[in-house]
Image: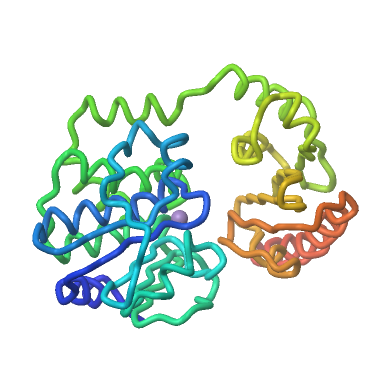
Length: 329
Ligand SMILES: [Mn+2]
């Protein structure tokens, strides 16, 4: 198993480096790719440090943070060292065909899944709330001269993946990394980032109203089915409706789920959250993955499939609650 020091060493030795993000990048994926790229560039201005990126997607969703795409490249060959963070699944790399061509392959990730592609260096730490903390560790091993933009680009993933530290619980590492980065961030930049990131459209609010009035409760499980027709009616994309925590943390509820129909890909995308019940164990049964308290599955597009998931949760929840009760005695 690799670590920040080893990855920093590889970066030092490489003259050409290319960063990758995962499919549909979130804040953590962007901090682990774009943020780390900016950090490496600042430290090594003579190295060629590039990015493979889904420009349209990022422009559409993260223009408040990223609007310079001059480092995006279309071709990768074996003269490059490729780095992917926040993901160790081949299928989820944007895009794996290019990653595969690199001469040296580096991966750092905070998911529980085992890596499923060839690599030269792999650092997995699933106890961390965000891969951006790993990216920060690598950058600090390299003694990067942080500035406002680099620090903001790296803290973004820490704040979003830990939900402002509520998911990282008493782990001091995300807080420490954020503290160090924050020293370089201007108040206006932080303010603007939060304002933009938390912005809700009227359509978002309409969806929230829908979600809160239509979710179902069954034996300690709260869930909402979001059909393609509903998404069309509420003018939302499958990506925008991924706000499962809208129905989270309700008293007496152990698991909360969104079942989102994705007509284009012929799937029902399932997002599960919990307060400690290992939802990733349920995901595994259906070929999904993720974290203990946050996990997902891609089901076939047949609403009967969701009954199977609910049934499996009921089965596992019974065992979990029984064990928990015994522990409390
Ligand atoms: Mn992440």
